[in-house]
Amino acid sequence: MNDFREILDSEHVYVFDGAVGTRLYDKGVYINRSYDELNLTQPDLVREVHEEYIKAGSEIIETNTFGATRHKLQPYGLETKVRDINIAAVKIAREAAGDRAFVAGAIGPLGLRIEPFGPTSFDEAKEMFKEQVEGLLEGGVDLFVLETFSELPVIEQAIRAVRELSDLPIIAQMAIQMDGKTTFGTTPEVFTARLDELDVDVIGLNCGMGPNHVLNALEKMRPFTSKKLSAQPNAGLPRDVQGRQFYMGSPDYMAEFSRRFVQAGASFVGGCCGTTPTHIKLIAEAIRSVSPRQAISEARKDSARVADLTPVDVQVVPAEERSNWGRKIARGEFVTSVEVLPPKGCDAQKTLDSIRLLKDAGVDGVNIPDGPRAQTRMSAQATAVLVEREIGIEAVLHYCCRDRNLLGMMSDLLGAAALGLRNLLLITGDPPKMGPYPDATAVFDIDALDIGNNPIGKPTAFSIGVGVNPGAVNLDEEIRRFEWKVEAGAEYAITQPVFDTGQLRTFLEKISHVKIPIVAGIWPLISFRNAEFMHNEVPGVNVTPDILERMRVASEKSKEHARDEGIAIARDSLLEVRNVIQGVQVSAPFGNVKYALQVFDVLDEFNSTGAEASLPA
Image (cartoon, rainbow, N blue to C red; front, side, top):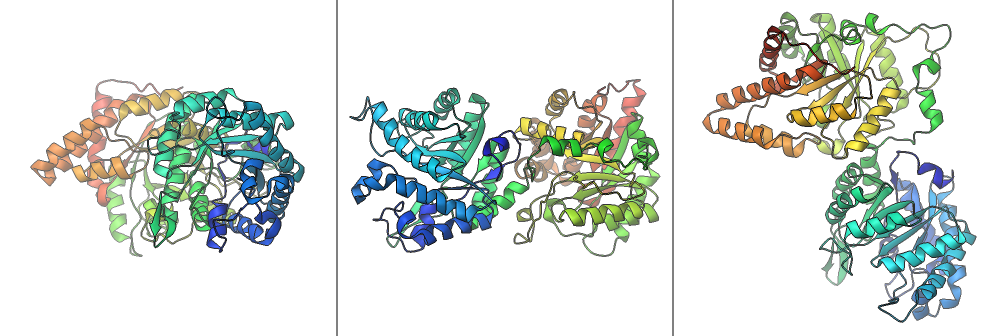
C-alpha cells in the first residue's frame, strides 16, 4: 500500500471496516473473554473477520486491539502480554490486508479516570498508551485510530503517546450519547475545536449512538475544523432479544446514512458495534455513488487534460463544429432544451410524437435521461438515435456511469459517436436502491469521464456537459467535484431543478472562477404533492416555503389551478435567473411537453424588454 499520509490530500472517501467484536461474538466467542487475547490464541479466527471486511469493500481495517492496554488486560491476567498481543494483532491484520487495505492500529480508552477526577495522573495514562503504541509500531501499522473516547483529557494523553513515538497519521474519534454530547457533557463543537488544535489528521465520531445522532453531530462539527472528518456509528441501539443483544440498524439504513455522512463532509466512513460485512458491503456501494472512485493524484489530473491526451496526428474538432447545440454554447448564445424521459417499453412512437412538437416550436435540443431514479426504460442512447433520425432535432444524451464499467463506457461512447450523437451530459446516476429493483448491483467505476491514453483514430467530436447541484448539502464538496469535471474537459453544465433562485445565484457567484456556461434546470410543478416530493425526496432540490404555499393553495382549488400555478412558478424562476445563465432545460412533467413549452413564453417577454443577458465571463 502507499503511504497513508498521501491519501489524506486526496478527495476520495475511504471505507473502514465494521465491528470486529460483533463478528467474533457471532462466531461463538463468549463476552467474558478477552477479545484481544484471541490474537494469540485464535489468530485464524481474527484473520477471518478481517478478510470478510476486506472482501466487503473495506479499504482500511483496524487491528483487534481496542482493549489491548495494560489496565484493560489486567482482569484477565494478561497485563504482561501487551506487547505480544499488539504485535500479533498487526501481523494478522497485515496478512489479511496484503496490498488491498491499510492497517490502522486501534486504541481505545483506558477504562479508568484520570486527574483531576481520578487517581491516575496524565503522565501515567500517557505511559499506558505508549506501551500499546510501541507494540503496534513494532508490528508495522500504517496509521492510528483512537476511538470511542468520551473525555478530552484522556484522548489527549493517547495523542501525546503516539506523537512521542511516531509521526504516523492519527484519526481521533469521540463517542456521543442520545443528547448529542459525550458521557461527560462535552459538545461536538467543543471537542472538535480542541482536537483541531492538537496534532491529529482526522477528527471523527464512532460507536455511541446510531447513524442519525452521528449525522447531527457531524454537521455541527464541520464549521469548527478544516481537518478531514470520519464517521463510524453503531448499527443503531442494541435491543435485548431472548437474552441476546441485537443491533437493529439494517445494512440498507446504514448505507443511506453513509451517503449523508459524505454530504456532511466525512472523508472516512465505516461502522462500529453491530455492523457486519453485509453493512460494509452496502456502505461501500453507497459511497461509490457520491465519491470519486479513485484519489485524484497530480498525475491523474494531468492525464485528464485534453491537450495531453491528443496524439500529434489528430486534430480536435472545434466546439462550434461539433453540433448546433455546441455551436450556440461556444458562441455564448442562449440554448433551450426540454427533458423527455425514454419510453418504458420498446414502442417509442408516443414519445417521438411529443418531441416533434419541440422541433416545431424551435427548441434547440431534447434531453434524454439515462435511467433516472434507477427506473427501467428504453436505452437513452437508442432513444436519442431515434429522435435525431426521425424527428431531426438534436438530442442531449445523458450518460450514466452507474451501470457500466470503464470498458463498457468506452464502447458505448465510441458507438454513440459512430451513430452521429454529438451532445453528452455525463452523470453518475441514481443508486439502484432508489428504484423498483433495489437488489440490482451498481458498478460506479467512475463518476466523471475517465479515459485511457490509447489512440482511437478519428476524434469523437462530443460536446461534453456535466451535472451540477446548486442545492448540495455539502456545497464545498460539490464545488470541488465541479472543478474536477471542468478540469477533465467539461464544456457546459446543467443544474438540478431550480426552485430557489437565490440559491442558484449564490452558487453561481461561488463558481464564477470556473468559466463554463451554466444551463438551469426548471421543473414545472403540477401539484402540492409533487412539490412536497421534490423538496423532501429528491436529493439536492430545495422548494422554497413560498412556492410550497403557492402550490398548496392552488391544489386546494383544482388540479388545473395547480398545474397553471406550477407553470407560472417555472416562468417566474426562469425570468429571475435569465440574465445569469446561458440556457434552460425544462422538464416535461409526465411527458407532457406542452407544459414545458408554456414556460418558454417568458423568454419572449424577457427579450421584448430589451434586457441583455449578463452571463458570467
